[in-house]
Image (tube, rainbow, N blue to C red; front, side):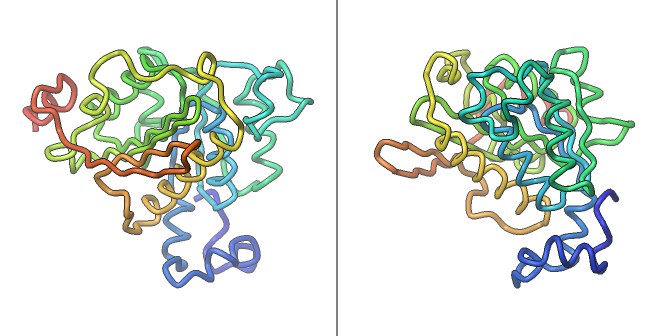
Amino acid sequence: MSSVEPNSEANWARYARQLSLPQWDEAAQARLGRARVLLVGAGGLGSPVALYLAGAGVGQLLISDGDRVGLSNLHRQILFTQADLNQPKTQAARRQLARLNPGCRVLPQPAVSPDTLPALLAPEGRPLDLIIDCCDNLVTRQAVNAACVAAAVPLLSGAVAGWQGLLALFEPGRWDTQGCYHCLFPAQDEAGSCTNAGILGPMAGLIASQLALEALRFLAGLPSPNSGQVLRHEALSGRWQRFALSRDPGCRVCAASLKEQ
């Protein structure tokens, strides 16, 4: 476990505010300290998520991203500064998160590809506790989902483009009723990334905060009001919507996995 022990003085000092919550006890903090999480993408969503998870005490945070920090990233990718320009995002992220919480072990990882996915989902031969997909590429999203289904690893997926954002948690034990990411987006026509749709920094931060909150609840074993639902936000109207997840019986990803079980 990378974080300090739950009953240590240093832990109480660092995590005092969350440990003061009646629903968040030492056992919840200990579970968080043992958690191993892969973050796919360290951009507008991944940056705030990484900060919140490291700050809360996640024991091991693996970050997969093949990009370097660019000037146009800085208005929303709050993990980075001007001094990080042209640096690999994973290395810059490790430096910044180490300054925030040295008890969180941050492990830079290569970008997602068919060759890297198996090792990314089960480093050292052990499956991760949660994958958080914060990338802006649909092909990568579908590949990550398929790998999570094959490895029976929970997937928390978030997306943001323009004034809209959404997130959903896909759990292996609920594929038979709620399906997987491919059930939700079976076609290759999901809304484009912020590269062509544009985005305001706070919009990414809003969805990232929800992703981080959902991840912390899940890792600590707390119930979520969003379980089995897609949470969607439209920023211009300020409206939140929930839609029930449902399995596509003909899904080529999770349907095949269910038949093998």
